[in-house]
Image (cartoon, rainbow, N blue to C red; front, side, top):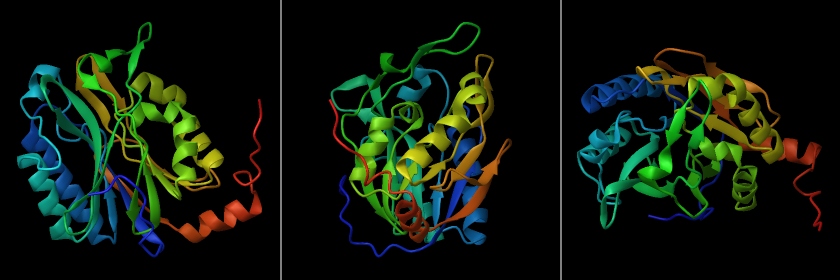
Length: 283
């Protein structure tokens, strides 16, 4: 397992799926839904399938603590996901995995896990920016109360080339994406459970901005709908090309959207508008 870009993969145009569902506290139901949708996406040609943040469980932290699994060894949730990737012969991004925190049973990491088509973990990224937000008449969430932050930018070799890993609230911090591009990323993942309030205001604008300024594809599988009386997600799972154009989107409901991610288009756009190469130091 590596958290660095090895650049050993010959990049190619790749069919990528963003899978959307509405997770609750029933892990079996959540995983069964994802297995069904992912099998359908693979049947339509998806070679990389991406899942949202908190894909296996979205609910109170007391319930989450019961399903935490260590990495890289994992437990029943990870094993089931690895078996699915191998069965479908597809790479699989577990957008937000509830990773046990060594030495602290009351806290966890929010971790994006990349599985190759053999079901092997090839990268893990712990969410750096935690969602501590209080919006009047909107979400009141303090993610850092139960979740520890990561501190490392992570890329992984994928079928389309170097892929940068992020999670949800990270999207508001462009310096992370610039770092991932400097590490070689041609595409960036943003698995999310974006709140309905902030999503309606900012989801599309933030994701398109990251794509345009990074001149990279942005791949953002998302949760949708009401999870409880106090929590709802925006949906709109989306893939955006490096010109900032939306090339696939699922506004609402369970399902998936598929688009081709082509590293040749990234290279072409970076030649046309060489803003990355034109960056200059300043004080």
